[in-house]
Image 1 (cartoon, protein in one colour):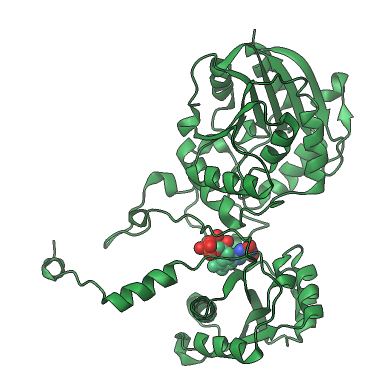
Image 2 (tube, rainbow, N blue to C red):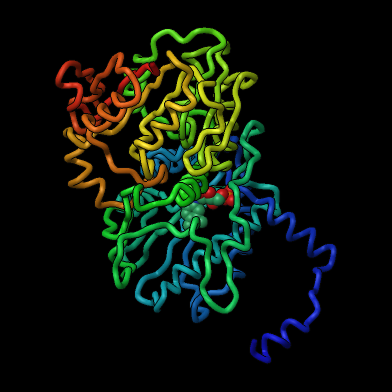
Length: 456
Ligand SMILES: Cc1cc2nc3c(=O)[nH]c(=O)nc-3n(C[C@H](O)[C@H](O)[C@H](O)COP(=O)(O)O)c2cc1C
């Protein structure tokens, strides 16, 4: 230990004064809002928030930031449309576009760091004034936006701060934080393995080669991830959105899901049902509606952060949760006794697992004799599989975590080795979009492969 470190150890911890502690506690209560009540905020107040924000430091004190306040309802609607689905852009009181002047960007993205500092300062100002905010990098098509706000080419826009008042029904939950001990270390880098996301081996990882739509280092293969790493990744990133009704739903997905659930058959009252790893609960709400309140339903996930998200989301969908439990499945092991479950549902999750065949053993263990397994999987032997190989797998992995589509025939063989196959089908003849049902030999060629097995 250096003398300096010894000196530091000798220093007495210093608690903040009560008023400072109160202020810090209040700041810590800030949480993103994506459900605004469409009310107005006075222009003077919005200007004051910007005024507060520019007390932030800036690189070389150049203050080369520029903030464009958009409060006109027609422009906010246009902003929503350009963003490609941020409904809160139209419902907030105002958007503050975060811009900066190019040409003096300096090293290490200093200008971006400066704009970020000012943005957060504005957020805290708005929060202390009793408003809610959401900071968005997802602002949509740059050219359309540039035209809407009249931004010259010498400036860039990198985000938008939406400010408003939350609807009284908006979620009050804050996205979970990692334990702080996980995200700092003294003097040298150190971090628990579960929070290190696997990447492809390389000597260096040049920043400019890593983009959302193109990431040569992204490790899509879940067999290169541990269960803990997968759980960690999925559990934090599900909170990229608020647990609102309808979150993470797309119509296309809905059609395919209906076809998957078409395999369910009759589920008797009192049956014990487990849905495995539904991430944000999009499939759960549909399944609960379909099965009704007479089954005993469990959601099994890898992280408590998924479970809290799904539970809140289901409440907001109007689901009655009296018959639902939320259970962890650490290391892919289910918390249920042998032979205690009547129906296990795996909604496109085998391809997310480090060892899908081993998980099917686990499903067989918990299923009662005569019990049912419904599994669906993205199929590599399909037009979608070709698209995945060609395009999707070259991008960043999605927030649902790493996955690699499986071969329908392999999944069919794994199921057949443990269960009696009762029914199987392919879903989707095209690479994306359709939910055409494929039967007979063609069932192994659809975008999705779905199967119903019976535990003998
Ligand atoms: C740089 C940045 C960009 C963000 N972009 C988006 C976005 O495009 N859409 C969105 O819904 N949330 C966005 N967020 C909000 C984060 O999802 C949110 O801050 C995070 O989940 C933590 O939740 P909290 O703000 O409630 O603490 C962004 C946050 C930051 C800091």
